Length: 472
Image (cartoon, rainbow, N blue to C red):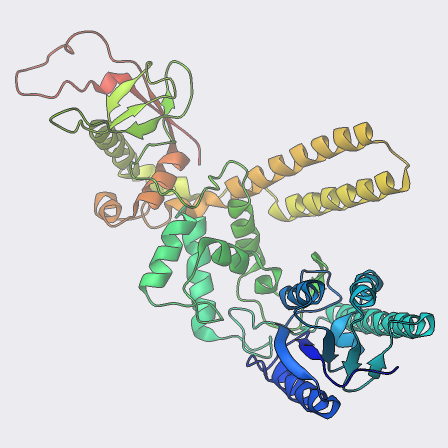
């Protein structure tokens, strides 16, 4: 193909994985492209690059889209790249590129594969053949990688990737300090401490993730729930057997943490921290809704925080006084001689059996999806079966979470002085203890002053707060 000697060329560079993290791959491509443009007598007017981004994945490539925009606008009338597979690994993308270049008479020169003649049928055929070969190479490479990962997973070997927290770069060696952090965090979760509170403590202690960043609730949740922590191998999201690295958490602890963090009844909004002991925990004695804390400002003064239900009409009670009363009742229960019996685990719950049932139900969901895809069942049948299975899985998760909460009372039910221990607990742990031991119901206050009231005393009436003991 005859090419004009004077062109305003755009360079495009791309590398799928920048393992060095410094963009050196695309820099080397650009240097080679500049050398080729100089040989052709073309002037480089712009450079577009997509570093660490695959052309096969289907994700938008900002650099490539900017290149097309420049070609459509006429800002550049030629393209230089290192190889044809840097431009495309998708036939659909290639067709769009052909349309743009054919319309504007844009030639493409590559360092390694020579020119692309998109102005003639034979040239376009060759370009399409090169694109098909590139697509095949990627798919074949992915197939080999998947077979290798499956073989490694079946043999219990680590398949590589980002260093998992708790283990060294080889994925096998336990990092003692990080392992102890995971064990501590797991114990905190099982003891009822909120994910937010655990994250705050970790960051205050200077603990960092495997990438050196501060912890976030979502990151800690993922780290604690990884099956590898229990010495289990996962392939495509499924546990397929034991791994050849040592576990950091014993199987029961790991399953318990997963159950607690996956409990549907657990509050999932990690952006809002509780400020009052019984907010969202105690119930309204009229409508049964959880109460919330509320504090309104009057014209000249700020009112005291109160507990009220969603309607704001059934109960309105002083939050500090209700909290103090409930704390006194809970501490009295923890101070009895038989308080240690609260620590006895419920031997009737077989968590391993629950986990087996949950795995079977998850596989059943996958099978339903395949049946629907094959046309063996219709949408209504799929929806009905899915709702039933998800309801069963939620019940299993709730049972596993309940079975894992025995440690919520550890360290206080068996303490010589529970009140002293209580003073050192954070809000989320106190809430977990109360939720484990009792159901709190706030009743409407009676009209007038309570019987026996004396001037100077609070109007608070303990009879309007019902504390019903649970069996932990």
